Image (tube, rainbow, N blue to C red; front, side, top):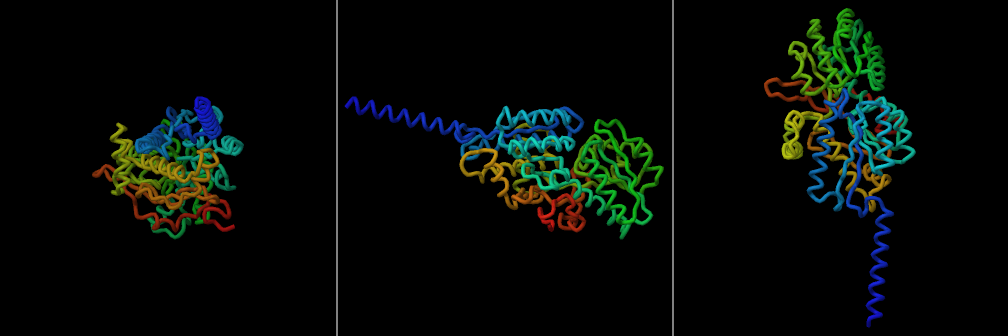
Length: 417
């Protein structure tokens, strides 16, 4: 009898040791955590844009963890501050992959760092999801290990130019000078080139100015635009750049209309700029403030931010909506994982997300093996000073006719081979 009990105990111990060994060999399967890395700007020139996105993701993951996580596994986000330095961004992406063993890297908001980060992601076979930076070089040629959670710069530029054409009731730009300005990072080259090509095709003359990332004012650019008598201005920069441009336009009484990318199309830009210039600003974006969408998901995004104590100025803006939607995208991908949470299984899960309804915070989001651009729609936005909130101009469908899908590789994301 004692011998039988001893054998049973030894068998039970062997099984327990076997289960433990299997758990150790399957990352995140039984440890209770799914590690996600976030590398972005917490202390540099784009902090006003990137921090609300990060905080919204934190809030959504806390919400999901409070509901039991993903099949009982808690999401752990490991955050690293790159101070908007491409060199530091590369170092930290390597760190979260090699040292922290994350299954996904998100954030990645400095477009100048993409060229060096791509080989790292490809070699490690770990997916990166960029919440803000969206270069053509990461979608054409198609990149298997980088996904974009934001509308891209080409689409934003297409709609910004389309809005101006419609505003002035123009069929072409013959004899028209167009001011084009951008932040001194990799993305501005593509913003400038895409818009210059489009302006020239329509018969216009582009007047291009490059602005520093750590900007104090845009006096030189504004004076150049004024001297050239541009009809309107198209701007790609951060919140700080948008404020600097509008302040300089007011200073030199340049009253032409201005549009721009999602980075400058934020409430704080209007609220921190002289009204005489800001009233002429209608930017572009693909995220809508949580309270404006009037959906249950929009209300939840706002209420959760309040519950966890995030600033009102953050949880009412578009960057909060963008961060929340990106977190929804990640969680939806994690829910589709079968078996262990590994870089490969998480990639496969994300590529199965179809038509994810964000409650109007963004257009519906989709990913698959041949398209890693989750959002492919953009629309203009203005600001209501009486309501103190951003307001969309029309629907995404209304402005889709201007989108040329310039960043998609042939045979991907709806572009013909």
